[in-house]
Amino acid sequence: MERKIETFSWEGMSIEYSVVGKGEPIFVMHGGHSNCHEEMGYKGLVDNGFSIITPSRAGYGGTSKEVGKSLSTACECYCGLMRHLNIEKVHLLAISAGGPSGIYFAAHYPKLVKTLTLQSAVTKRWIQPKDKEYIAAKIIFQPFSEKVTWTFISALGNRFPQFVFRQMFSSFSNLIYSEAKDKIADSDIEALQKMNNRQRSGSGFMVDLTHIKELTITDLQTVTCPTLIMHSKHDAAVSLEHPYHAHQHIPLSELCLLESWGHLIWLGNTANKSEEKTVQFLKLNHLS
Image (tube, rainbow, N blue to C red):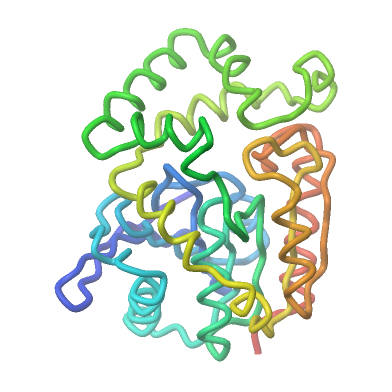
């Protein structure tokens, strides 16, 4: 896929973004440790006639961490990017830790959003300061340490891809590896290897941990566009409490629980079903 990467300046801050494909625009709020180079799940959407605009969220890639002063500030910047690109309305796709940004944007800028799709998305309070995951993240994903962390993971994964896949599996899935073998596709190991080579945290993941505290039930209740909530039944990274919480509070929402092996719903033997469901939803609610 041909990818165009640009930088947009907004009130002294920089927003890096990419554009892939041509057609109805989908605005992607990528997940944690990602950026505008993300590509998981993109090909199927582009092949079905959509263009994908992905800003590196606050603190990720070439986007200023100051963009993430608050969810409100970040979403004002995204509005500025839409104006810069002369886009009046988008399908909004929010992934994993990008969930709060997508929900807040849809709630506060309803005239700009045709649909909201939440994929493996964080929708409420997530990892807490008392949790071991939080404590570990504050050490290994800080701006001063994250480059070393991802350099080590990517180097190890490039040398021993199958070993790293099995080691990381439990962070994405609540299934025992042997239980999930029939759900894992032959291409999944290579896909995870490529993902790890793209991953960087910058200041972004620390920003994510503050943004989730700002999202309220009122924000969810204020979302008025058709919303598709997609989540694996076996997600170990973002528990099922999150899709159920979103479905309970977003009025026009549809909950789709998937049989994929874990958090990365674009991988596995059921990935095509996830793609088909997403495309069907977007085409049913095409831009007018």
